[in-house]
Each structure stands twice: as structure tokens, then as C-alpha cells.
Length: 329
Image 1 (cartoon, rainbow, N blue to C red):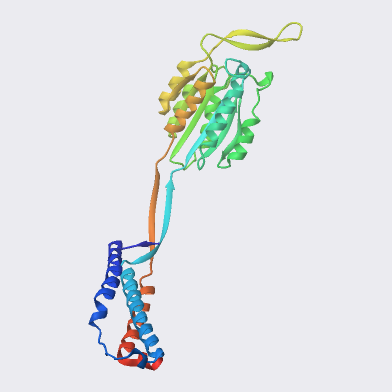
Image 2 (cartoon, rainbow, N blue to C red):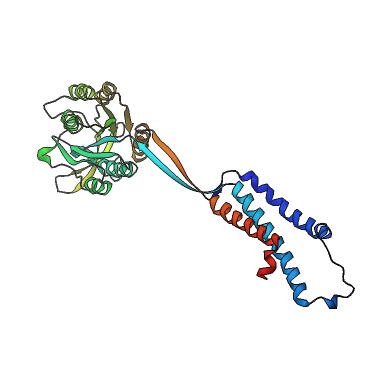
């Protein structure tokens, strides 16, 4: 509850002053009858007089209190908020080729990418997100959805592709993403493409695919994953044992930069887990829409619950002053 005109509450400070004035001065102004002996006055008359004075004092205080509170306009407030935000459609496109087993990320590139992607997904409540994986070919892992739990489950299920379908088809991955986003009515359509290699598979080259994405107003953020120089990579030796060898990191940065430039996105290079997480955090910040909050306040005025009792009390005391008090008591 609140008061629409709270400054009237300052009048409450006058009430104790008026009570004090009444006891100090007011009683001297009342009409009195002198008796030579108080024993001549019945006790019932004395009690009735005292009761009358008490009723009048308390009644006047109550009426004034009700009037002051009514002037302050007590009211109940009900706040209604309407939130409007534009939905963003985001496709996470993750490389699942065998090179993602490199251990310059811990425990390897693919697992690091999955963990960072899951953090990103959890922070995008309200948006529609989907998941596409690619190696020699491109597949839809999870269509666009607002169901975060389902998307997280599909992210956990991403694995390195088998040798038969190994490779890096960046152009086909972009084309597959465009096919999922082109009919979207979202304000912003975004692809976040993570790869650690260069395009060596597929019928569509990445630059042509990027031009097509730009025509559909689809923005592509590209992330090159991999350290500079040599990276530890698990291989099987002649005796069937798995050993770690240093292999050359081959990331086509120029193509990834050009893809981002054509579509109005940005290019990022991640060389370890920490830098990869920072990349996705920055993209998360860039791909945010303004939230419009409209607030309405509904008021229920309560002053009538005070003025009506004050009016009846005033009428009651008018009757009392006209002598009806003696009939009642």
C-alpha cells in the first residue's frame, strides 16, 4: 500500500498537540455546575460524565485520524510489466573432422569446443539455437529450438567422424546452415562456424557459400581453432600403440576472415581453452538485442473506506451533542 498525497500525513503531528491542549485548556471552557458537597451527586452521574468526556475525546481523535488518512489517499498498487525482446536464430557449426583430436586444447579441440558451446547455449535463453556438424560432409545435429536441455544433449553426442567421411567441407556446412535459416523471420540470423582446418571436401567453396549467406542477411562469425605451429596429436604406431606426435597446424585463416567480412561478421583465432571461451563470450555480447520493458501501474483507491466511517461517526456525535447521549446512557 502507498499514499498518493503523503504530505497530508504531517497533519497527524497535530493530534497529540490537540489532545494536550484539550486537557490543559479545553476543560476550563466547559460549562460547570458548582455543588457544595460532592456526596450529593450520584456516583452514576459522575461515571456518566467521565464516560461522556472520554467518548467525545476519542471520537474526535478517530474522526480527525480518518479524515487525515483519507486526504493522504491510501491506495493499493499493482505493477504490470510487459517485456519485449527480438528473437535471434543462431546456428552453431562445429568441425568434427579427425584433426579436432589435436591436444593443444584440453582434453582435445572437439571436447573443448563442446564445453564452450554448452556454456554459450545456457546463456541464450529465449533465442532459437541449432547445431550443425561437418567433416567431409555436413549434417544437422539439432534443428533450431528453444529447448536448451535437448540442445545440450545433442551437443554432448558430437563425436569425431569416422575415416570414411573425414575431411573439411566448410562450404557445404555454410550451405546447410543457410538452408536452415533462409526462411527464418528472426530479426537476426547468425552462424558461428568453428573449424581447425581448410576446405578440402564438398562441391561448394566457402567464399561462394558466404556470398549466398550475405544475400539472405545471414551473419557468420568464424572461429579458427588451433595453436600456431605444431600441435600434439594422437596417432597409432606400427605396434598398435597410441602415441602423441607433433603435427603442423593447418588453418585457412584467410578464407575464414573473408567469410566473416562478406557476411558482416567477425573472425576470431582461439589457441587454447581460455581464448576459445573468450571468443564465444564476445560473440554472445555482440549478438544481443535490446529488451523493451513497459511498466503499467494500476491503483485501487482506499480513501472511501475512511471517509464513509468518518461521515457516520460525525453524524453520530452530532446526535450526541443534541442530548441523545443521555437517552442512550
